[in-house]
Structures are given as C-alpha cells and as structure tokens.
Length: 182
Length: 382
Image 1 (cartoon, chains in turn purple, red):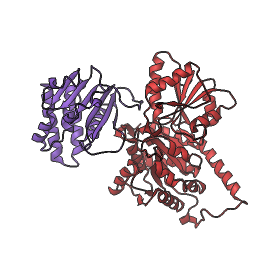
Image 2 (cartoon, helix red, strand yellow):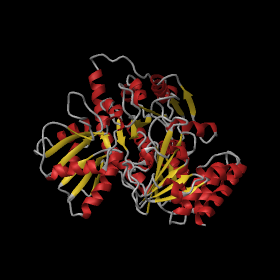
Image 3 (cartoon, chains in turn cyan, orange):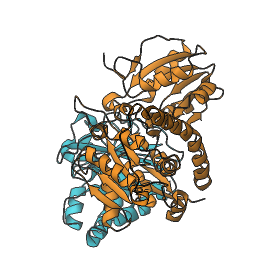
Image 4 (tube, one colour):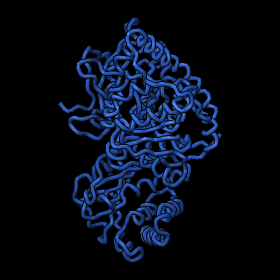
C-alpha cells in the first residue's frame, strides 16, 4: 500500500492534488482513496490531504499516520513538526524549493527531493500554482509508472475551466518530471 | 456485469444515485449543515441532467415539510441533510412515516450541538431511530450508492420513508472507487412511481384528525408495515444483486462464522475493523466482524443466531445519555435469553479518530475475558 500526504495552504489545490493522483491510479486498475484534512476550509492556513493506493481493496478508514511520501507545496511550512510526522526513515520528502536537498537535512534525515516548482509554474503557467507541477515531480519519484495517466488526469480536470491553462500545467509537469529524472 | 468504476466522494456517490433515480422533487436547505450531496445534485439540475424540481427552502423544517407535501401529491421525493439539519426536521419526520410517504433521505452522519462540532458521529440519525423511518447504514461509497438505489425501491414497495446513512467527512469527503450502473438499468430497477393514493390522483385526505377511536389501530398498522419492510429489504436486495453482483443482507458477516471474538460496528469504522481482522487472522486469531446494515427495522433473531456463543464487543458512535448506547442496547436485546458475553464501547464522538490499534485493544480485552457492566470508551483522553 502506498500512502501519500500533501501539505500546502488553503487555496493551493492540495485537496485536488490528492484526488487527481487517486484518479490516475484508478485508471491503472488500482484501488484508491483520497481525502482532505477534515474540517472547515480556511484559505491560507496550513492544510493537508491524503491518498492511499493499493493492489487490494482498501477497507480501512483510519487516518494516514505513516505515509511513504510527503509532498510539500509551500516551502514556508518547513519547520512545522507535522511535515515529517510519521514519515518513516525509508520515506521520501518532496519539497517545492529552489534550495538543494542538503539544505533540508535538519528537517528530515531520510531522502529529500527538492524541485523549484514555483519557478517552473511562473515560467510555464504564468502563475505560482504548483499542485500539478508537484504531481509531475512525485511521478518522477514514485516507482510505479504513473506519469502518463497523471498528465491525462490533470488535463481533463482543468480543461473545462481553461484549456490553455490545462495544457500549460501538463507542460510544467513534464519539466518537473524531467528535472527529477535527470 | 457493468464495470464502470469512477472516483467519487461519498456525497457524490449519493448524488450520482439520485441523478439516476431522477426524482420529481428534491426540497433542500442549501447551506450549512447541508452536505455536498445537495451541492452536487444542484449541478445536475442546473445542467439539465435530471428533470427534478428542486425547491430551495428556508430551513430543514421546511425541506421535510415540502417533501411531505410533494410526496403526498404523488411525486417521487428525495432529500439529504445532516446533524442539526436532521434535528430541525424532527417534527416532520414522524409525519412522513405516519402518512406512509416513501421519501428517501441521504444522511451524512455528524455530531449534534452543543458544543458545536461538524465532525462525524451517529448522534443525528440515532436521535430519530424511533420515528418510523427505515434506517440503512453504509460502510463505504459503494454502499452509499447501492443503498440509495435500494432504498428508493424499498420505500415505494413498503410505503415507508427511508434514511441512508454514511459517515461525515470519513466517507462523505473521501474519494473512493465506485462502480456505477448504466442509467438505463437504474431507471428500470426503480421503475415508474405510481402511488395507489395521492392528493392529486384521488383527492385523498392526508393527515386527518384521529382520536382514541382509531389512532391506536393506525399506529399498529404502521408498526406492522415497518416489520414487513424487513423481508422486503431482502427481496429488493436480491433484485439489486442481479445488477451489481453484490449482496444486501441485514448485516454483513466478515470472517464471523468461526470467530470466537467479534466486534459489532456500523458505517466506515466497520471497514477499519475488517482491515485489522485481516492482519490478526494472519497471526491465527479467531476474530470477526458483524456489521449491521439495516438498523430499523432491527433484525433481532438473525443477529442472535449469528452471535450465539461468541464473545462480543459493540462499538457505538453515539451516546444515549443515561442509558445503554443505541447499537449496544439492540444487540444486547437480541441476546437477552442466551447470557452472552458482551461489552459496550463508545468511540469516535465528535469525530475523534478510530485507529486499528484501538480496535486491537478491544479484541485483546475480549481475549482476556475482560467484561464489565459499564460502557468503556475508545480513544478518550482521561
């Protein structure tokens, strides 16, 4: 079972990131769950979302306490204890940051991946919206080959709102994916 | 068999079933404590995907009143609510059942005030368990979808209103895969709604004054009707089973038959119990689950037969202040003459999370033969 936790701020599309990831894995025939942090939604406040991916039917409804991956959409959240809470030493922390991974040694002793998603988003999408970009980065880190399904899912989720923006998000995902794979 | 799997929240799964049922009227109060069910359904109405007349009323009291009026007029009526919304409907709920109106309501289980809390527990639907509505509880989003479709047919067959429950946030806001039937199949399954009696068809009178000369007999008929709903639930479930391949019973027995130690629990926590049972079974522990689905009418004798000889822990997600918690009370009632070993637990009040390790403790206490009269509390800080 893969368990993934996203951290960001209300309005960043943290909840959507988890849902899109689950939908992409569902297309691959996996069993999925995705849920936001329960409670009132507050723009700008630290928020979390969660996803479970499994080959077997998922019956448990307990909260995700020990994720394999933690994805941080906003670097300013680093330092909050909940960022690495429950993340096993074998887990991977993926941070939206222009810093080198070594910079986050104190935050997490395990593997850290840093990607400047905000720069990529501003360059390609024209706005600092990083949820899709970070999904591209995550696809580059996860063993399972999910990138194509993920791109399709991001595109189909966004295209009803704005087709150009949907295409730009996919392009930004590709850049992030390639940077990670490099 | 249809294999159209899509990712939906529990609220969306309920709305999707409602879209396929295409009710004539949906009265709903559109703001808090309303759920995403009505929000999603309102999209279907706005997009012309259903022919439903949606009535945006000024309160839940009005929502259920409009539902009663529309249903008495002969319309197929559905609605949804939660928490304080259900409580504001409370005055009208027994009118719906007393008038034998087959209204279907999706309930997202959430705590009731005070203190204000928007998270999951079962206090809201348990507060109306004795008002003549059939009550069906759902573990996951698939069950929410299936149970809503089943409920529609059951309601109309029995001329009784039905509530379909799911857990607030835990499933209502959680995306899971849900296998969706073809629209046409659902349409054929629920069929056309043609009530024998309605305001518009026969100029009938609904809700007339009934004094001591007849009221008792009417209430006895209502009692017989909900008793009959038990067998109709199974029959309707069998019909739905032909479309979905899934079973619909009074309760689900999970690894129950050879189990010595059994947890009884409803809605989403039953899934968490199953996940733990799988792990404990690998260690050779004889543990199982009984998950009640049909809570009203309550299947006493069937539950007794299933639980005979087992050591039992009942997990309630609501209190009955000053009395035994509601699910425990019913289970204990089922077993009154066989002197069963049974322990009451209350968990998850106001959205307190339930962890697998909490349930493991419950099983361990059963194995250590630790029973007491008092209710124990899971996950409570002391």
